[in-house]
Figure 1 (cartoon, rainbow, N blue to C red):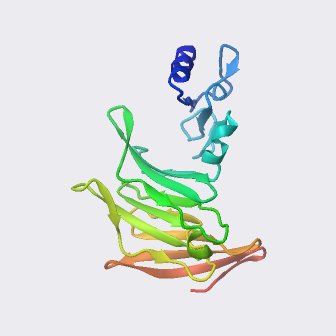
Figure 2 (cartoon, rainbow, N blue to C red):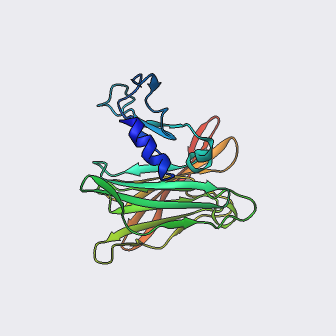
Figure 3 (cartoon, rainbow, N blue to C red):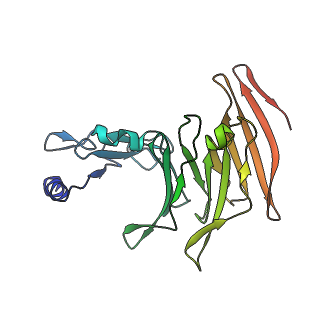
Length: 231
């Protein structure tokens, strides 16, 4: 009953996010699903009625939320019960949160991470990834330290209910933009990063975690003409 949901949300000044996962081309009282609330989410998983193997789409029906959603990213564990989300709030500030599905609802899982170190008018964009089981996460900050970039990896501590450092941060070199886009392996012991070096070429770097330390495993420079491996 979207009418009562909208009325309740309006009374309490709350946004409505429609879960229209399988509602493509469906309507409620003449309005397309996904266009009724401030935000509408669709799923393109292979089990849905419109598929792309994986992925989805977010409809923004209120410009107020545009800057909160553009440049945001998220990643889930294998069964979708733990989700990490990086939200780009403005040009100098981003936050990353992890959520866990518990008893038919979502609760925050551990602490909030802030990405605010953005000198030289660079944008604070946080990239994030999560392991297969959901208990290891990685946060990339391509704009960190004047564009050198950095990746921080954490494991969840069930005793403290906090995310704790898993090895030292991986620090980028001069203007490497390390951590622009990252992907953590299923076991959480390898991570790859796509680093935007300029308008027509970039770099992929791969790191392995061995005995408490993250080691560079290799890198690949990608240009308009293809790629070349350095290691």
